[in-house]
Image 1 (cartoon, rainbow, N blue to C red):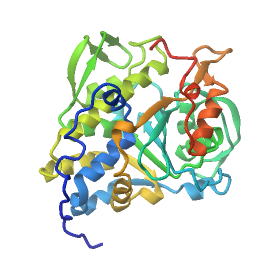
Image 2 (image 1 turned 90 degrees about the horizontal axis):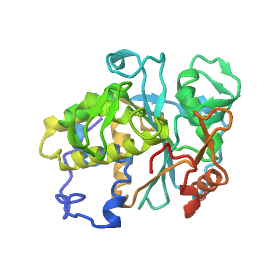
Image 3 (image 1 turned 180 degrees about the vertical axis):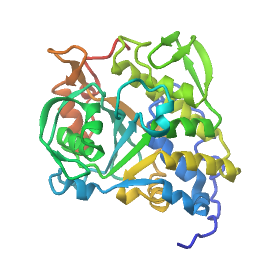
Image 4 (image 1 turned 45 degrees about the vertical axis):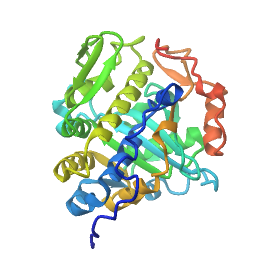
Length: 364
């Protein structure tokens, strides 16, 4: 592969995304940032500086969704834009074993976001699927070729460990009716390394948070978190709301906003060494579908999303209600859930009623 020189700077390159400060609703909308935004920002901020480090290609792991899922998938609609499933996984193996990630064996998909970028790529939406949601898991095939029959009332985040990432994609496609164009996954150890590579992230909390399960112990106020503390922050659930996963989703969104802001402050173009450390941490933790499993493909995809203004991005939690049989679990709340998926599937406006969830986890 031949690597080209850095492209000529265009007017505005030096200040893009950092020179304006919003007010009122505009500033609040900037809080609705998701993991994929961070990835795209890293790819575009570093520009073709990444191309100088071809060895980073080997860090990225790929999953061939076409081979794993076959033809039993939703039709790709002409007006459906781009749809990406983003997972944060909490495997207890390898480097993750040294982290305080709990005593559950195997791995879980701790965070799940369906990222929808409408045609034109000028804005984006992301739907958070609570990990405690009970779903019908379709028939799937494991990586070793064994068939796993369909099952009802399966907790969403257990599918990853039971059958694998391809089955998570298939399950999301079944419940949403939306074909996923791409898949991205980042694991805990890599997340920790990424935060440490940028020198930490500053967050502000309104109330004391003491969670012996995750290890998080913060007083109300502003704190600079290192990688380990950041993991505790995004994983905490017992120290907020009613202790369910629903309250944690809000903390995760708040942290990702702070992480994105920290990345934007860093002079990545002016510090190739730091850019490499960040890129190395991210790519080592990254698994994608096979179409994105190279640095050049990721960079191309990131550049194609340059038109997405982070201030217009919106994160929505899938409307859920507490399960009548097991109040510790939730189920999709109708008709809101179906309205939300239909709006994304058809690239139409999302009704306000589809953005409201009967179950809030005790948080506002």
